[in-house]
Structure formats: C-alpha cells, structure tokens
Image (cartoon, rainbow, N blue to C red; front, side, top):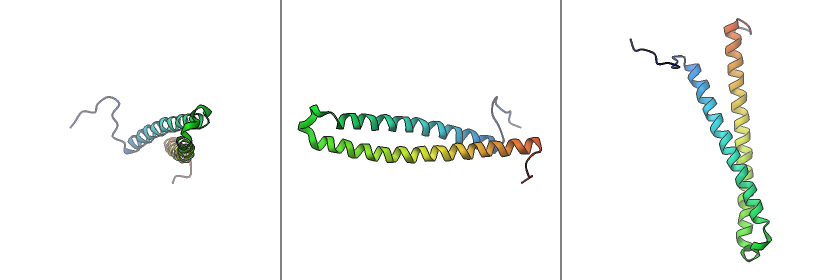
Length: 103
C-alpha cells in the first residue's frame, strides 16, 4: 500500500475544493490586472499631449471598453465560483455535523 504524503488527501471533494480555491485566486489576479489595464488605457486615451495620435487614442478607448467587458465577466465568474465553493463547504460541513436535510 502506498504511503500517504503529508497534506495529501484521498477525498475527491477536498481536491475539488482546493482546485476551486486555486482557480478563484487566478481569476482574482486576472481581474486586478484587467482593471489596471483599463485605468492605463483610459489615462492614455485622455492624455491630450498625444493629440498627434488621435487614432491611437481612439484605439485605447476601444481597448478600455473591451477590457471593462472582460473585467465584468471575470468578476461574475469569480462571484459564481466563490458562491459555489461556499455552498459546497457549507453542505459538506452540515453533513459532517449531522445537520441539513440529509440530501
């Protein structure tokens, strides 16, 4: 029989929970980066010293709007993931404690 490494679990639920937490961390980091990119694009697009580059400034506004849409989608996915993660933990805890409806 193979020895279990420290902190290794054989419970698939624990592995899924850890994976969900890892994905949530990655999404949160991407959301932060996306919001920083939006701020940079808007700042650059509003920079009047770049008047010779009006086409580039317009592209920056377009990029900012696309990044805002991506940011919204990331925030929504992160909220759903955290909600599902919380619900999974709550249900698992209730079952361990003998609470809940037994389903």
